Length: 170
Length: 220
Image (cartoon, rainbow over all chains, first blue to last red):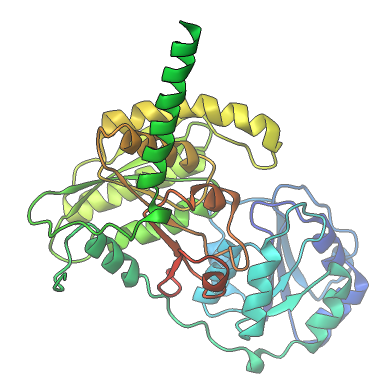
């Protein structure tokens, strides 16, 4: 099994540092993961503990033009709470643990993470310090698949507003 | 003489205020156009950094579903936003191939506000962007402006509204708040809330807090 850690185009050092600890990596191994891919975003990160794990395949990089393949091949995603990342993972039906970045100034990101956790579409870790615990207790069977969006409602609204509707206007 | 001047200015200001108040969407029911038979609607869509562009492009795609080509799109993008320019060109190419539509016009404007820029200095950068935005809206002459939240959309929507005040043309402004906004509107959303003709949100929780918003389900 492969774990994909992604922070999009942000910088979320504390998450990467928490992943790169024996505490987390031991837990990763005990859950049956054989490989880990870490996308570190805007920062350049040199892993300290990860190289010691000979039985864990790893790839660490900053940014790539497209991370779609890394999403596709993984079994679990741990990411920052960016809406784009969240939907990219959920559209691909991946199990997802979202971690709040409490070093951000205006942290509106947590709103969508909390709301989606309430609906059980993903699991949410409110602070990096709790990641190992959340990861340990994570059960993919409890996750509810995200329903499809109602994008056509947008077309309908615009058509009606601009006078293209086929419905009768009274 | 001076008194007459002041009196005149005061009267003008009063008329202007009454005019603005009378056309503010917040004081009127949504204006839905009478049945449009043939005229293609020119749409000016504002793109922005982060998730704004991908969300907007997904919405725009739906306007091309079906046989009718009711809409003609052009984009407004901040000049420093290379990612959105790249995505806009890819979108234009894809739709040209798929639907045979013409190249989509892309207008560049100076950025209104960089992410994290102080609100105070943003006032000046937004004003600067406003001159360019006004020019674009006049040149492009859209019937509809679509925005979903980046700073770039504020001067564009305001320009459309200004044109309405001085009665040159009636341009609709439809605002779609990002899926990331669950409990509270974004800054752009709060600024444009009084002037948008339709204001769409993607979380039902926002409908209790803001009276004018419309929830039509999750759109992306």
